[in-house]
Length: 321
Image 1: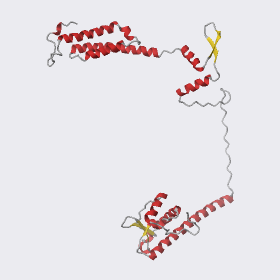
Image 2: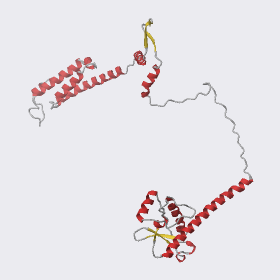
Image 3: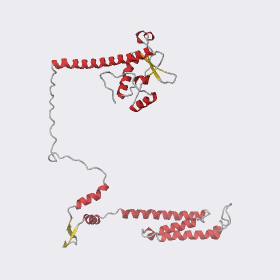
Image 4: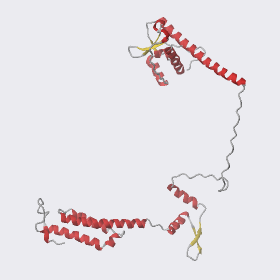
């Protein structure tokens, strides 16, 4: 590669300093020296004990800062290709050396870690030293290696010998069900029927009692609306409040009472007169779900200033504290 083709080189738009033939010739000369150095010292650069390849790349970076035209850039690319090939080969050698495994050296290190006691007097002809391991040698190795295994140990059952055949399946014997006696057949439905009738009768009586309370309040002052929450809330018992809401819902379902919103948007309850109900109770109704917790129960007691329950507790039920 000669330098006599410098005459007339340099495209338009390049400054005179960048197009200086002497400076460009010097840069190309240094690039050629680096390329020759890499090719001649290939074995030394592949040696992992030195950093000659790194030094060559650093020198190439310094030269590239002054590269302005294509010829110098082509030499830089040629040097980079050579350095890349060397780096790839050097990396493969390092990987090969790192993956080498010497079983004898590993066994020697393992025995030393487990605390092998050497017996210098009992040398065998091969020059190896004999010895014995302490009692906790394998426990020590297990504790050291357990951090490398996160899986749980497998569980195996031993049923007799290893080659034993599974036992033959047992024949399933169907047990005959004992026929219920006629007395049991006769008593059980009667008990369930009596229990159901007793619960239904108690609910009907409680609904009638709450209806009587509502009618009594309206008889005293028919023009004064009754707040729904003041009517059903018992300030002394949360469970009684839930029961009052449950039993009052039957009054609404059967058309004996109605709930409406006052001017403040709060629910009020009122009895339904006989003339207000359509024949057969076919009136337009809307369903709603009321949820209450002990926290909201206490908050409503404070908000409405409820001091006494409008629905008194049954005589056979004691008030909760």
